[in-house]
Figure 1 (tube, helix red, strand yellow):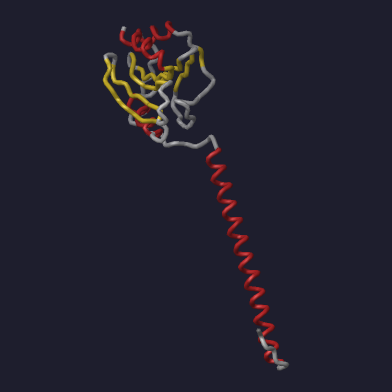
Figure 2 (cartoon, rainbow, N blue to C red; figure 1 turned 180 degrees about the vertical axis):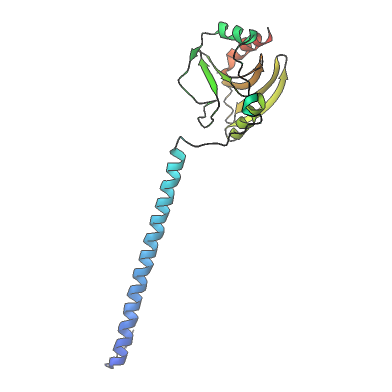
Amino acid sequence: MIVIKKDPQNHRIILSFLLFDYHQNMLRTIAYIIFLCTGIFAFALIVLFFRSQGVDVPFVNTLPSSETKTLASGEKLNTIKKAYTFESSPQKDIFGVSIFRFDVDIRTSERIRMYIFHDDYATIKKNLLLLDSLYNFSEVNESFGTVFFLNDKNNNDQIVRFITEIDGTVVGFELLKEEYNRLKGLLLQ
């Protein structure tokens, strides 16, 4: 219990102490509000960042632009185009990701999606390796050439994704697993 004497000097000291305590509490409350608003603002920025679709990933180019391959036809590639009824796709994502700026022709059929890249194999591979949070990678030598597989991290074995070089053109495929043997047979012809 506080004993207050009638001394005016004590009255001013106690009054200033009470006002100081009041102002200190008010300043603390203002600081908490500012801290809370800053956190909300930072959270909003993070949400907006992850919702944005225009995220640019650095494009790694290993060849000067004059040496970039632009072949889009060949015997095996034409065989594949004839075996499936491909239509031009309005979608511009590559293996489900829309962050790359590749010059690519995307074709879709009922059970297969084909990407015809206009860059070399090494450039495509280096850029796809940036997707290591989504895919596990494996590179194998098949009878028809080197194949770079992108396997789902969640072990969804329903879709096969890979890139390879066919007739001097880098081609990527995304297809249902049961369709892979048919496509592999076409690539081996």
